[in-house]
Length: 419
Image 1 (cartoon, rainbow, N blue to C red):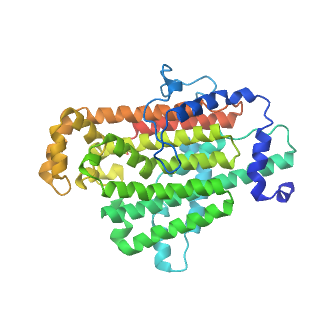
Image 2 (image 1 turned 45 degrees about the vertical axis):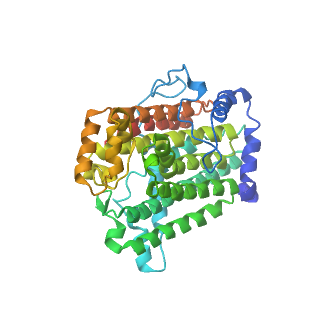
Image 3 (image 1 turned 180 degrees about the vertical axis):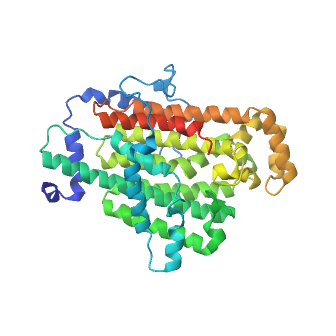
């Protein structure tokens, strides 16, 4: 085929060249304005050189942007985001199970543990990335048909690879977290460390990370490799922050949000950015993809914190109150502490394996607006994620618009979920 003569290493350059010939350069104005407002309000704290701005970016002040009060440019019919990419999710699931095959049977069994049929969950992160891939589809002005098909097929395969890498990194982090937390259940089933022991669980996580590295290398894109490598660094940094906190840090909302970005939001934000980079998009568009992932990830974790107090072990896939029982202070308790300063003394005395203090903390939480304020903060980040999608360059392509609507709907799914 014609595309076979185009070297893989020049693929992104070709995409950028094609993008540069779009007929309406004004379509990037909104994205460029949004990106500039972010740059003006950021400070250095993350490994990628940007600080997370927890307030509304200036471009949204006065806009009263709310989820589902979207412009008419996006199709309004109800969508199930997961069903839109269900066929691809099945392909990725099968490919992941094939990728974790190892020569040593015990290692293979351990590595595939959370990739087995019925255990893998809804594959939230791959769903986001596949939808983002379509939402950022480039429009090539009148290329030869063979070239257009080859470009689309090759790009999609590379973006699917990012989804696979992201899921392997995510599962590896779960395996390592369960060892650190001495957890015995995950997603309603026994944890790998509980069944096969800590050593094999750690090695299985390392094996998944190594397979993710091999898959990344096959893309031959140094910027994408750098983005995804930064994710692994952030996961380690976030976990270290969690287990080495001082008293002041444990009671700091800023510290908690920073840790949450490293442990949860960095993976989805940098993966979304990698999707845009592979498609050859501008820095402005790549940052919009990043902002969507960052804010969606933060909203997801904030709701997780709420559900840890309100859900059941079966619905959450982990034991209720698991964080507070391990002495981990999350947003609801931090907000409650602002209303009841005496709660800080309870937290400083220790919550892990201290039933009396846990009950006292829960009493303060129940009398506070901690749960409500956490939901409000999650909604704020969900709105920011939605705003990033609406700031993308306009497209008349039906599939692009449908995927963007699905990404908007996911922000609502995240903040209304019960498990």
